[in-house]
Image (cartoon, rainbow, N blue to C red; front, top):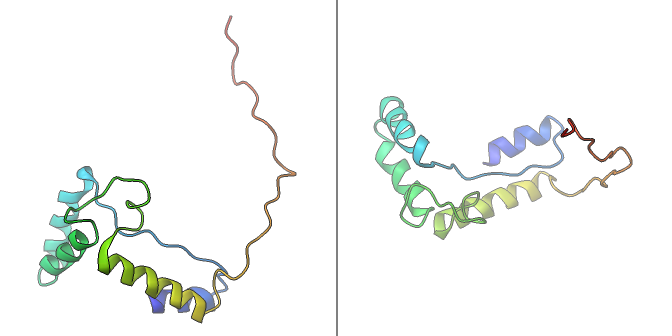
Length: 112
């Protein structure tokens, strides 16, 4: 996390966010196969940490949990991310929202 944030800050990035790995039903088996093929010695540990950060499952669909996870490991990731952002000065500024260019959508077709 720290190396990614450091590289981003060095490249001029001013803000960052993160999403914890999501493995919905359609992706879970494919990811596990890929992980077993490319990192067989780490596969069991990676899946264990995913399950720990997802309440014992590979995926949580609940809003607020599906992007960040829950439990001690997810909390550790959150804290490391925020500490790294603070250390490298990311997420300090928030650009003002410019709504002057907004135009309401027009109908694409009309019903006869």
